Amino acid sequence: FQSYALWPHMSVRQNVGYGLVVRKVSKTERDRRVNEALEAVQMGSLGDRRPNELSGGQQQRVALARALVVEPSVVLLDEPLSNLDARLRQSMRSEIRRICKDHGLTAVYVTHDQEEALSMADRIALLKDGQIQQSGTPESLYSRPETRFTAQFLGDTNLIPATIREQSVGLVVLETPFGVLKSTSAPAQLPEAGNVTCSIRPESLKVGSEGQLSGEVTNRMYLGERCLLTVQCGEGADTAVRVLE
Image (cartoon, rainbow, N blue to C red):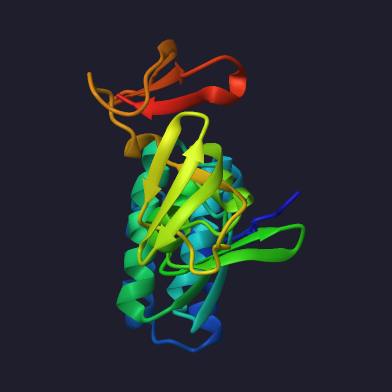
């Protein structure tokens, strides 16, 4: 259980501005910053309410405004958008990032939401059992995962067993259950020979009449702007791939 620690006898506006009162910020400046913080979290019209008159998601936004209004040098945000609906969560992502950028704040943002992490972070540290599995920019973790865990955790992927056939500068040729695959994004520490696992994102595969892979569509999942196909390319579940249509 996590409490938002809002003062029950204070209004929303008083709760948000309390840190500024402690810091002896002038009333004019305090009112301006409180109004901006409440508008940023879309709570401007509820400034006179008490915490017990708010929903859980609204209380969460008040706590977020209170943390950001004092403009700290570092702020820890532990899943701050977990109680919000999808549309508001998307809007708040952009607003939190804008506030941090505008005021030069360093934010340590804890989340299990992959899309949230990829869209908001300058750098990501992916943890498992208290150990950092990989760290870097969102693009590097998604496009060049160093471990099976990283590849599976960030987005959907096809993990294909392969054997290294040959290598040259910037190119590795792999023998897979689907035939020969050529990769130009092999890691630097790749061994000269042996068994490896090849990670291919569904969006990197295209449906067409020609190509190295052929198979039967066994499942089609509608995702709104796109569809995710499961294609059986041989006998056994381990020979199926997922493709975006």
